[in-house]
Amino acid sequence: MGPSITWAMFGDKEAKDDFSSSPKLGYLIDGVIEFPLKNKYSFITEGGFKQAGRKIKFNDGTWQNNATYRFVDLSMALRKSFNVRIKKNVSTRCFVNAGPNINYWLSGNGNVKTTALGNKYDVIFNQTPDANFHHNYMNDVNRWLFAMDLGIGTDANITKTQRLLIELRFGYGHTYIGKKTGTSKLDILGFEDNIKANFKTLTLTGCYVFDFDLRKSKFGKSTKDKEIKRRR
Image 1 (cartoon, one colour):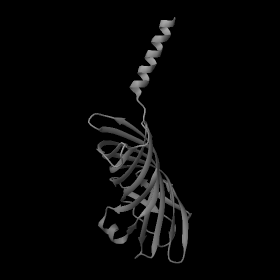
Image 2 (cartoon, one colour; image 1 turned 90 degrees about the vertical axis):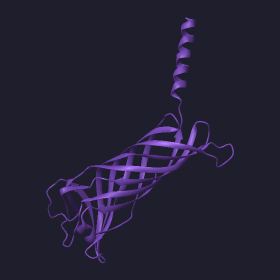
Image 3 (cartoon, one colour; image 1 turned 90 degrees about the horizontal axis):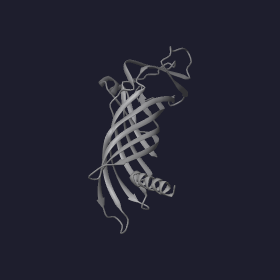
Image 4 (cartoon, one colour; image 1 turned 120 degrees about the vertical axis):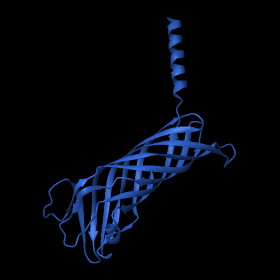
């Protein structure tokens, strides 16, 4: 788990001229399973929950849309580790990893405000807009979002079977949150939006790892079974 910073990046030149993006704070909570491979490689799979979003300004910077989105977070990565010596008698490694990231967009809410007024809203997916100014109707969106993750970090043993892992990860989003025909409508005069945008995310996470040797556990079980058979 750990904090994240996300930027919205627009695909059209006109949108880049009309909208400016600011960093949006969020967080990540995942469970991790790591499978060791040969030559200090390992395969990583993760799954959990992520909160991110967009903070954009429009109408010459006089309006701001501060949106918070929630996702199911899934990722895989191939990791390469390197032994380093930071402290005596403490086994420590540095690592790099890369792999795909998949998010499923669950829900969202936000706040549109000017220098004088503000209005909170909930995101409504794929419904016909009406006059409810507390609903941001987002149609033809991509609920499945794909990205490529690149990470670096350090991994230190606390005990023989427990490790503390710190990682800095950059996620390069490829999927726009809206399709070509996608729209984002809020029934407030002066509201503008463009959902032909993807996310770039920087995340700093800490992870406590418990190691299990499945081969040893199977070996112990088979030996115990043999002892029971001999006693019979």
